[in-house]
Image (cartoon, rainbow, N blue to C red):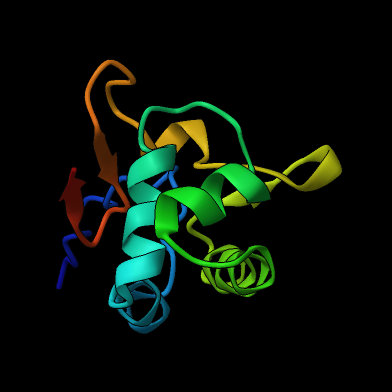
Length: 105
């Protein structure tokens, strides 16, 4: 009896954040506004993101830690944050593709 091998599914080269963590992170209005500010692909400071989110600086720090731990943003030098380029299919449009969902701002 001959066995037929199923073709291998293509490997997903873009890592996807955990779905539950993603939903918990984007479910807060402040974090949603912060992601919206980052959707252009530009690097932003905590102060800029706190202003965009409508919160105090220290609160902004906590929200960005939540987004970073969920894998939605990366932190650079000097408290600079951005959405990883592989989640931004077209930097000219405010769209973020986390694999599980497509966010349009």
